[in-house]
Image (tube, rainbow, N blue to C red; front, side, top):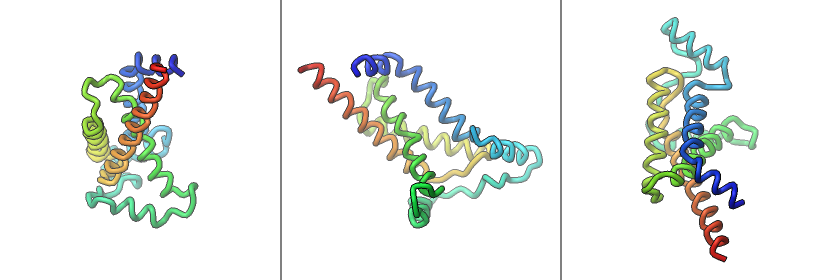
Length: 163
């Protein structure tokens, strides 16, 4: 376990950059959903809006509440969308403190919110998705969960190394 943590800490910047690139690939370029990407590119070429791009949503918790109302099982698209927004930013909350000098919870949260906001803005500007405040909220919670996991793992590792 110590060897794995040492490796992660040593290469945290590289792992973080790869994570951000994968995040952009999935959230902005819609990989591996290439049919979605092709539809978006066709929309750019013709000037028509892709069927995957809808109006941006700026009312906090509107989408979250709507999705929660429609969740009937873990297989539902609504549940998957909620879970993915949380899961996609957990690595951010875990990896960022490994190489940032200032790694207080509120600082990592602000960085996570900024990263999420930039992705939402990119989606809107490139017409590859929708800007949704609820995505930012869920990504922020994902960042916090990742930071909590970071604190838990490294406090246990520190305690074990002192014993």
